Image (cartoon, rainbow, N blue to C red; front, side, top):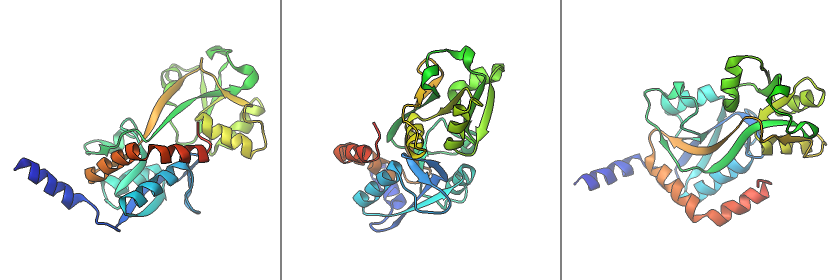
Length: 243
């Protein structure tokens, strides 16, 4: 009896074939993973991944790019979104207090770390006094050190501004994803190895997940999709230059 009740609840929460799948994504330039600004067409590997899943599931994809605080409000309170991507159980915990969210398996594995000029790799923490990051991003790996003082956190609107500040000596390092920085260096006409991830400096391995407060059945379908379409997704990663 309990089994059939659970099945009935899942069917009630599911989307019909051809229905619109409303996915929220942060309005930010994080290419090649995603570029989803308020104006323009979202693009990047994460967008291609969502498109492939929607096609596989027989659903129409509607991506809504919004600031992160509005995303959680629309997902959890106003329920104008079905899913959020990317998300992670460790992110925005205050916004999720008292709310139940279902998370998919890891869809994308990433590293966020400290990048310095190539010639300054391996010089250690003592050389870092000015650390840059994109406004609104939390440099998780640096939090204990920032709390102690001695390192000044400088925020900028975009990665390219931070790269220029490192190049001019106004920053000692920047905290970001190496793949994003590599792409931006090429866009700026600079050698992709000009800034390098320094493994001796703070970094954190994390992952992108799909989340939903009301569609556990979609999360399960997405998990199956990740397993069944591994070859297709590997081709997509290569297409976007992701290693």
